[in-house]
Length: 103
Image 1 (cartoon, rainbow, N blue to C red):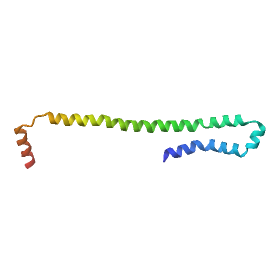
Image 2: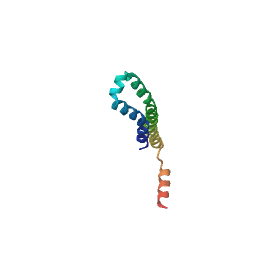
Image 3: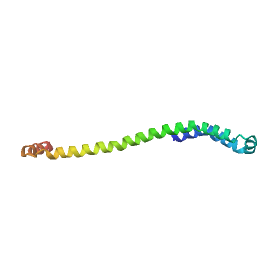
Image 4: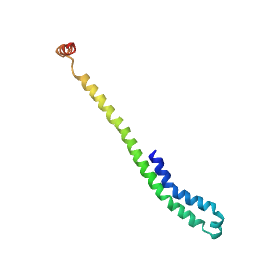
């Protein structure tokens, strides 16, 4: 899917940096740069977070709209059926309906 590809691309650089820091953990620890590496990794995660948030907001908005449509359409259906049932059925209307179905 497009969303999965976008997430993968967004996380690619930060994952690369994390793997590099993990493979050189002794060097990072000996230089005392643990906090710097953590800060850099957190900063690299800002972009994937932004991409994921935008994707989540969009998909949730579409889902919310589809669910809201159910609540708008169902009352409309009930109202229209009630309006049809309120109209009295006359003998002339029945005869007219029969004549229309015969042709």
